[in-house]
Length: 67
Image (cartoon, rainbow, N blue to C red):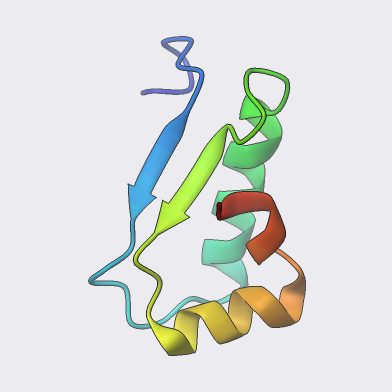
């Protein structure tokens, strides 16, 4: 896994992701937490669909994981 290998940045392409719930948000936050301190933006999520971005915006996660 990229986190265990010492990666300094992970980019996740969410172009095909149509839905995210609290479980998915939790996975993103756990990965971000494991990666923080390795880079300014250690976890980046790209190509967010509008409905997924809306959920991440509402939970305050967008600022942590998008450039």
